[in-house]
Image (cartoon, rainbow, N blue to C red):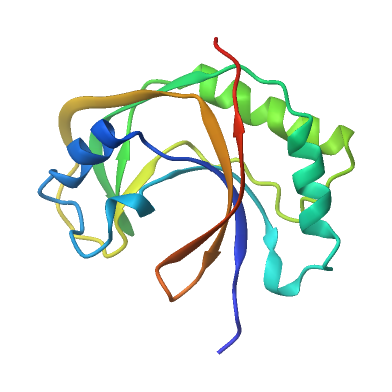
Length: 168
């Protein structure tokens, strides 16, 4: 099996939001709440990247100056996996993603994939074939971002750094 260790910039919900998400009946209880996250940017696969790429990304993130932004989800949807989403355009989150990509490009940090997915939070990696449903909004202000390596198939995240965002 080919190793995969994708590197992401992500936001994690604070404990009160983690608890609310973990209590949802469609959440997979076998995955710990510490693994809950919103992927903001997919960078590259560390397993196949030159060794200097990770320090270059970290150095670029060390100079990031960006405002905190709100995230809130009010729907559960099944799209291959079960996710929290919203119909709100999440304009501030999308603006943060665009600013993050610009910042990394300006700093010439490697971004092989460089994708900015629609902000969502996966609560069950196995689809449940149930219909979309509205839920009471679960939200928080993202005040820090994390650089995380996902060890695919091991249900493990390896943290490579955290960066505070400035008050909005």
